Image (tube, rainbow, N blue to C red; front, side, top):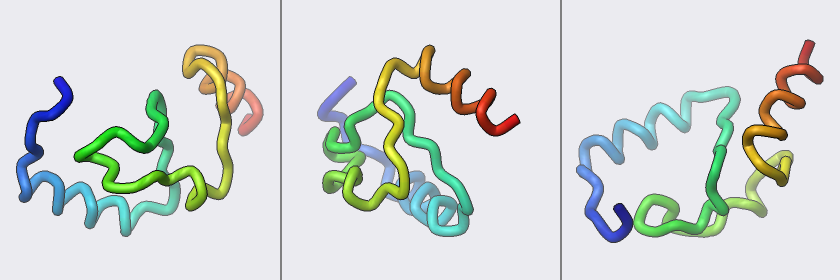
Length: 65
């Protein structure tokens, strides 16, 4: 499903929600898939947890207690 256009209203709503969020988990992407990404996001991240989501997410939850 790559190459399809995103609804501008939905995209704007998502942008506003992201700006209000205290935490954002981006799972299962390199952060460079277009048109959704617009630009690479790794350099903007406070932390990167590389690995398979099925391994990384349970470990993250466990570490948070």
